[in-house]
Amino acid sequence: MSDKEAAVEWSWSDAPLILPLAYQPREWDAIYIAFYLAEYSGSKVYVTHVLEGKEDHQYEAKLKTDLDALSKSLSVKYEFVEVLPSSQPPGVEETAGALIRTAKDRNAQAIVMSAHREPLFRELFGRVSDHVSSHSPTKVVLVETPQNGVELPRNPRRILVPVLKEQHPDPFIIAAALTSSVSVADVEITAAKILVLPRTVPLDAVEMALPLRKEERDFSSFTSLAIKTLGRLINPKILPVREVGADVADFIRDRRIDVLVMFSKRETGFYSFLTKDEYEVVRRSPCVVIVVVPSE
Image 1: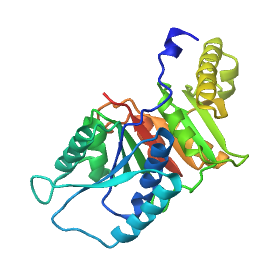
Image 2: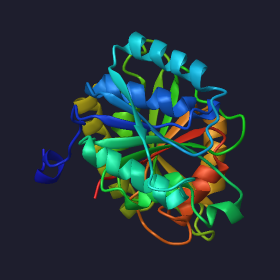
Image 3: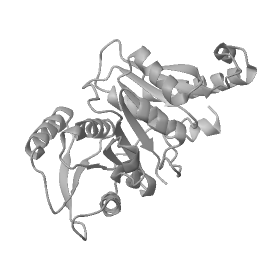
């Protein structure tokens, strides 16, 4: 094992997780992810609610009942935390700041929160999840719902880890956590290195070019290390594409992928903390996308 490989952290600590909730039905996928990560790492979950002047309690009771049932099935400890902002109603930045401070006060290792694609004019002003991801010194795991009606299966059997730029252990760790209690034989984790080829280069040229062969060997080596460390079978694949968002979405449909887990390095610009290609993958995905943003 090289010094670079030895330096890779293939586990999370047992420090707490922060789970922000507004008690809406569409947040269930984030609850599911947070509790499975907590079960996998031995963490406690702080279910955090930022109080607003006008509260909608329509779904709160049922969501709390279902959350409690999930925690018992996984033997995960949790605690409710209510945060009172300095003004009412709190704005996007103030809500995000309250969540970031709560994570710091609780010595949390990550914030796991729900995120939903919005019309572009709304995204230009930023979602709470975008502000948290851009400014939190703590690791952030966003559970993105790219389209209305898209839900995460209770036991996802086909997971895709697309690697657009940097290969990082966190998406592999999350994939392992989601399959930790699954014993079904056809569970598949595929790690796909995304290679964007110029239109003048045939897609089958990926098998011919020596530099690409080297990249394939390096990626397979990283994936082999993940298999050895996490104890999960992971299928490495080189995926040549023309248009990242559209071609990855087609691959998801063809392979009937249940959930995508991808890494974002927290870059800034028009697409918030996502690069253009990352944004397009999330926007076009026909399934739930988990985006993990590293701690600073």
